[in-house]
Each structure stands twice: as C-alpha cells, then as structure tokens.
Image (cartoon, rainbow, N blue to C red):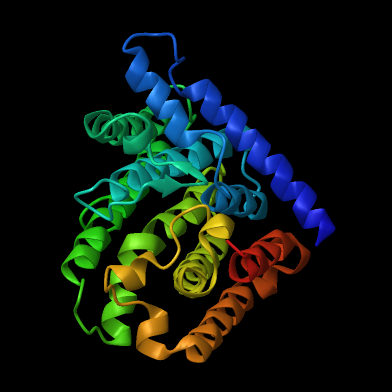
Length: 296
C-alpha cells in the first residue's frame, strides 16, 4: 500500500498544480471572486475523482497531459457542488475540508457566483480547441461531463436529496438518489480518464464503467457510515449532519452492520470487474481499497 500512497500523493500534488494554473490569478479583476474560487478549490480534499481519472487513464494508456484536463474538470465540478451544497438554502453547513465554508469565509452571493464560475471553468477546460487532437473524442468527454453534472446526474440527485428530508426511503430509492448525486460524477471521472486515451478499448471502458458504478455507491455508503461514526475534526465537515437534518442514509435504512456489509459487497464487485486486467488494473484495486477503507 505504500506504493499506492506515493502514487496518490504525487497525483494529488499534480492535480493541485494543474488546478492552480487553470484557476484565474487572485489579483485579476474581479479579485474577490477569483480569490474565493481559489479558496474553494485549492488546498484540501482527497481528490478521489482526480485519482480515478489518473488510474483509469493508466489502464487505457492515456496521455498524462490530457488526463490532467479530465481530472481538473471533475474536481472543478465537485468543488462547485460543495460550495453550493453548503449554502443555507441547501445543507447549510459552516465547515468544509476543515475550514470555513465558502459562504462563511466570503458571503452567500460570492459563494453562489463561485459555484457558477467553477462549473463554467470545468467545461472551458475540456472545450479548449487545442486540448485534444481528436474533436470526436473531445465532444464525447464534454458530453460525459454534462450528463454527470445536470438534472440526470449530480444536480438531479441533489434535488431528490432535498425532497427526501424526513421521508422513509427504500434501499432502492436511496440507491437511485445516490447513483445520481454522488455516483454520476465518480463514474464520469473514470470514463473521462479512459476517453483521454487516443484509442478506445471498449472492453476496458465497459469494465471501468461497471467498476465506477460500484465504487461510486460504495463511496456514498462509507460516507454515510462516517457521518454516523466519525467526529467533526476527523471529517473536516460537520459530523452527524444527516441525522440532524433527518435525511435518509444507508445507516438509517439498513443499520450500521448491514451498511458496512454492503460497502464490502460493492468493493468486491468493483474489484472483480478489473481483475481480468491483472497488474494493469492494480492501481484501481488499490484505489477501491482506499475509498472503502478511508477514515474521512
């Protein structure tokens, strides 16, 4: 696992450098907006989505510089979603990644604009004319990210989440919500990494798609377990928030032990889809271990 830690640390640092270069400098007008954008994106987070893009890119022999853009685009979408999720009209949280939420550090109007600007920048990154030599490849990647971000993806999942407060959902209904809210962007991260390769291997892409669907759900199950079990200092965000807001979670629906067993089942299913690729898929196996075994 130490080899994985070294790889992950290098990939996280690489992502940070790419994002820092893509974000507008803080001294360019409008300075406050640009400062807030950098505050929301840089210096925090596990970069799980970026790691998925890099690991998938390695499996598919993608160009690292093109995976940089895929990784950055999903991290920008993810950061925008966190800024908006923390707003009083959404989850109303004052803490994110161990520091004040964007709207607490700046103000609500600025935070709203930060989310808008980060979302736009994510697509600007992928749409840059010289970014990819193959226009069809580029359009496919943009299409993947739009689907994962919109009403049939992350935004739709958040809408279902808000509408589900205080309701008693079945496991199937909860899964449907999280396939959209959390899983769609995680799936997109893996597929964008794969599509960064100049030649597409359909067998690998299908396997990656199944892997990402499983690990995306496992990520949310573990998130629910941690929200129930971990403390605020460990999580870097307010612990117990879901229970406080009477939101349905895998823990409230299944119980703690069954939720843990479900995470293990999804982890095993994800790894099984990658096993045929042997050592070439080892990074994805290690990443699945990291996602399901994390403490925050």
